[in-house]
Image (cartoon, rainbow, N blue to C red):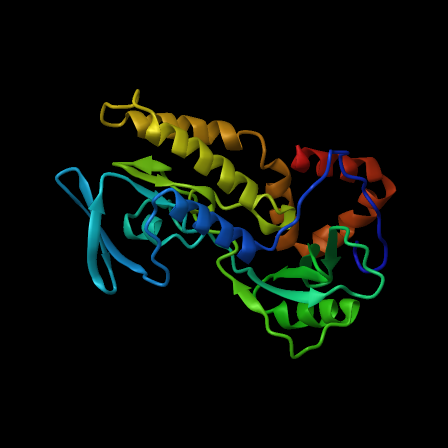
Length: 280
């Protein structure tokens, strides 16, 4: 939708979907990890990582808390592990900013996923259940104030509502997703544009694949696990981010996006094809 025209795209038929709030999903993951013996420490940032005789020594703001042969960095697009160990490529130019909040269902909202092309950026609305919806906005630097006004007017949002920032929107890709016993998962390894909502799916797939590799007794030689995970990671992402890259480009050039929007509305099959590609 571009504010003046709208189109509905039917998604693939399935046996049913389950929607869960992210904070509840995270809590379930933590609970399950603890059941299997994990030690969970919240709110303790890592300040440095050092490789000593084949072990990683982890230092936090409270001091050294231990060592481990492997580090799994699933700490998001702003990964402190990737930054500490200089595992990222050269910085990329991207001045976009993002914000997110939860709102009560707008009047007439039926729970469908909505994506909007605004004059000052783009945004999405997704049902969270229990009468709540997640509202996310992304704009170029300097345009967020006006984008907020557009979204607040469309959904009749109270301007005093609290928003949470999403930064960075983009980030340099990792030079390597695995090195010397350090493994990057999800957005820590490959940032996925929030427009298509695929980030958590890729994070779960890479985490699951890495878990199988780490517990396998066959990868016993130095570097075996790193090589196998790097190959599996490439396979997971290969050919699956084309729509993500396209939406990122259009979000960085909203005027071009609005120029192309009428063509997409004239040929809804193109949008339907894009949606099916993302879901599959």
